[in-house]
Every structure is written in structure tokens, then in C-alpha cells.
Image 1 (cartoon, helix red, strand yellow):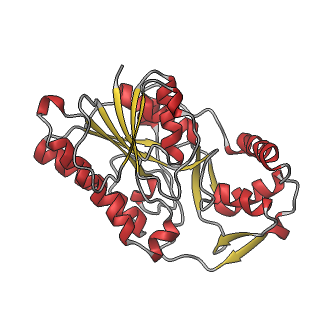
Image 2 (image 1 turned 180 degrees about the vertical axis):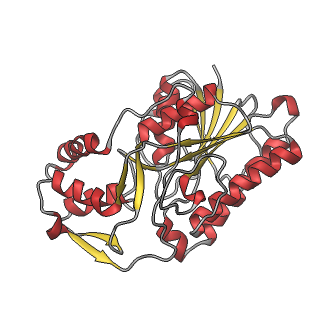
Length: 311
């Protein structure tokens, strides 16, 4: 049974990964500082091969023994927050990674885990045509993506200088159950449930790829099991929609008229027009996405109806 130390394992993507890893028989040591985005009552404690350590990756002083992988989900991820309060993003996303790398380096070389870091497609910056491969240079636009890019560069430097083994996964926009309502997909449902108009930056024409969180976690586990150290793997769905079209899809799926439930607000600083990444490399390991946004919206709506009685 491989032992995984998962950071941020109570967050949105991290918690789905922990669930999947436990179900597949991994021993999971979950490190989480329980911020506002932490999920509760997930039932992980029912697994005998699960441990929880409440800690901050910035201030951790040691890693548990016998860990095969450190899988790092811990991060501040809301772009709007990074624009108004960027220091915490640097501390968590860059300094936190530095500290984890140093904790790995402090171990005997024969006991060092592989560092599997969860990055983002946003590090590539905006590309209005084509797809970014893992070989593209990175041009981050926001404080959020800049701190994620800094982490990627630190990891590479610690590999070159100290021999720290690593794998980096760069994922596109995720959606699914348990996502904090600061994110577009869950925020739209939350606004509709509370009979509020959904706000959209600018004209909403900027495009993103949309990936089901379960598919993302399956890809990350595939990389963990079959990928090569010293490599970067893009994870995407090939399902590209503009932000306003996603909002319209959700509103229409709720039986409402988009023109009555959308409020356009000023664009945010540093807005990227389009992200698109090529994921042939991870597909070559045997992975492929199974869910589409259009398939999932009715499922998510049903969960809301069961939970709240109406939407």
C-alpha cells in the first residue's frame, strides 16, 4: 500500500482526490489547515488507512516517515482575491511549495518522496488560437497564476540543484460537487438558488476549458501510477466554452431565461482571453475524460433540488 501525503485534501479538488485514492487502496495522510474553503463531514475517517494532520504547509517542520508521494493541492485559487489581497497567495502558493521542497530535501535521499504538484493552465497565459503543450513557455497574467508559475519554477530548480524528483500536473477549469461558491460554476447555481442575478465580468466572451473534477483526479492518479518523474502533464477536457455561455447553459438548465438572470460588471484586471492546453501526453498513459459540462449540469441541478428543495 503506497503512502500518499496529500496537502489541501479537504479542499474541492483535493477532497475528491483523497476519496478516490482511499477507494483505490492508498494510505492517505491528509494535511490541511482548514481554511474557509475546507469541506466538512466527508467520512474519510471510516477508512482505516486515512490520517488527518491539521497544519499549514508554510510552517510544517517535518514530513511523516515512509511517504512515497507528496501530492500538493494546497493553494489559494480565487483569481479575484489574488488581485485585492495577493500576499496570502504568495505565501501559500509559492512559499508553501518552497517549504515542502525543503522538507523533502532534508530527508535521506533513499527516503525522499516524489513531489507531485497540482498547477494550472493559467501559467501559460492567454492564447487566442491553438493549444499549449507542456513545452510552451509560461506567461502568467494574474497574481494567482504568477504564484503558481513561481512554484513550478521552484520545483524545477530544486530538481536541477538538489535532485528532488517531481511531476507537475497543469489542469484546466474544474467543476463538480463541493466547489466553493466563489467559482463560476457553483456561484451561478448559488445565485439562482437565492434568486440573484449572476454577475459576469466584461462581456463574458473569454474562453476556458471545463473539466469534471472526478476526471481530473483520475488523470492525476494515472500520472502518479504511470507517469515519469521530471515531467509536466497537461490535463484538459477539450470542451471549450466562453464564460457567458456556461452561465447561460446553467440558467437554461434551470428553466429560466438567461437575459433575465445575467448582470454584466466591469472586467477584472489582467483578464486572459482564452486558455487551451493539449493533453495528448496524459492520454497516452491511458486516461481520457468521461464527463461533459452539458451532461453534468442536470445532475448538479438534481443534487441542489434534493438538498434545498428547489432551485
